[in-house]
Amino acid sequence: MESKRLDELVARFWEGACSEAEERELKEIVLYGELPAKHAELKSYMSYMDRSKDEEGLGDVFDRQVLAAIEKRENASDSFPWMKMAAGMALLVGLFFTWRSYSDPQIVPDVQEEIVITDTYEDPEVAYREVKKALMLVGNKMNQGISYAGGVNDDDLDSSEGDEDSKDLK
Image (cartoon, rainbow, N blue to C red):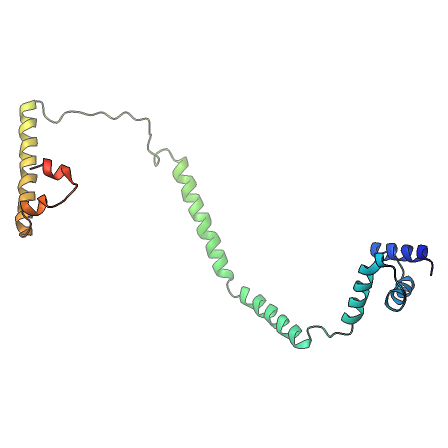
């Protein structure tokens, strides 16, 4: 066969434009005739296709198993329609209350309100005595906690290395 005709058939084959008769002719040339080296890829493709047509597919057992799994999955998805509806309703209710809380001025506090600080004592001496009394109460309660701990004494506190703040407190 002329090499021009062969090149034309190969080009039409790869484009998918050749007829069945041309494809059979090309297949006979490739599998049983001499083929130039530049068309070696076509020879390996044709021989693979020739071998694979004789092989059996995955079989009927596989097809039945796949179809059964698909049917089972379709049936399982139909068993929870109420769950989908409930989830959708919960989402809508949540969005409604979120929207309402941001749109209602009574719920969201006005950030620009001015904070007014007023004194609770008119006399600074009375305020000083009250603060002193509160700090003495806190100190007494802490001392009760230390005496309750029992085994902790000042020598144990001195053994902590690297903690200069605790040494300054003594």
